[in-house]
Image (cartoon, rainbow, N blue to C red; front, top):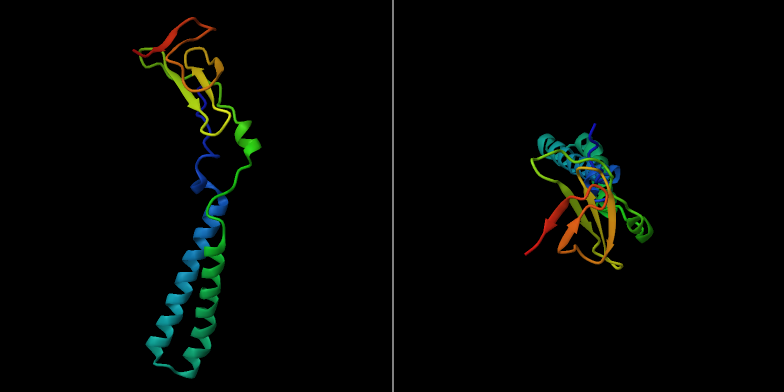
Length: 144
């Protein structure tokens, strides 16, 4: 059984905070639109104002709340530094498969996952120009 890697840290649009923010902003615009439609359709009667004004004001308040929420979930540098890719086997594609992940922040580290045996190796610095798996002795890549 092959486990797919988890990218929850990378995709902030998948978080529940993102969905809450989006739902609040959409609800705000709907409240403002319905309130405006009630005033326009009933011609400014006292009943239409009594219903539409609180609805529109509630929509404006919801809009400010929704736009004031954080768009992305912040992640501590400690969590980023402790991230480790899943050491799982990659599907066979007629040749040795591998996965390379390099950190963007200091310290620059590169993880190399051999897809045949699932061996995970950490290398200091960027991706090396030549790498063979120490566990199964397969040349994963060689740059010219």
